[in-house]
Amino acid sequence: MNSFIASDGVRLAYHIDDFTDPWTAAPTLLLLHAAMGSSRRYYAWVPLLCRHYRVVRMDLRGHGSSEIPPSDVPLTLDRLVADVIELMDHLGTTSAHIVGNSAGGYLGQQLAMNHADRVRSLMLFGSTPGLKNSQASSWIPQIAAKGLRGFLAETIAERLPLGEVDPGLVEWFLDEAAKNNPTYIGKFVLLMASYDWSDEVGRIRCPTLVVVPGAEPIGSTANYEPFRHLVPDVEMRVYDGAPHNICDAFPDCCARDVLDFLNRRFGIGN
Image 1 (cartoon, one colour):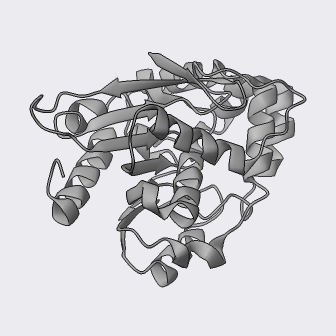
Image 2: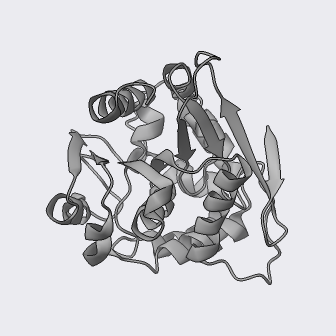
């Protein structure tokens, strides 16, 4: 685990996994996790990806091993995007291929729209153009009453296909989420639930892959359609019958789709 200090003084954590040939200049593949998660949730992706890319996994502020900002400091989307840019600067990375899961994809989309020179390609998994058109704001009182683990345990079928995954994954998923601070998570989710930039995604000009959970329970699969109609260079894939957390339920399939997309568009390792 590594860390750096963001420009506002908050310590942010990240991992680097790089098993590329040491005589090559490996491109950076930056993985941004979902709300209530951490970089650890990408653990099963890493073995498939790190032979070809310098894989960087970031803990978003207030998640995982990153510091929780003071409660009196406003949380903004611009600040979260700045964290990603500052990590790239810290690593000496001019531009990167970016994978974003759910809320992590919101940051990837903002980067691609507003800082296009930093994003070589964008790969979105279960990530709509903002969270406004969903029931996410209704989660906050439930999290306050039941805690993160209790809330997620009651709604776990919306996130993982229980008949298809190891029960151990379910328990690990719940335990990992419970490590996060529920007050901060409520603040984070409310921020994301205030945004809808569906009419702006045409500003994403880089090669883009959008992977849709076919049984998306958080909002609707219709919320992904702006990508299909507005993004100039987009590929859409649907995981039929899958609930929201496809990155956790189907990590090998997701990682293979990333490698396939990047290989066809750039050549593996480029």
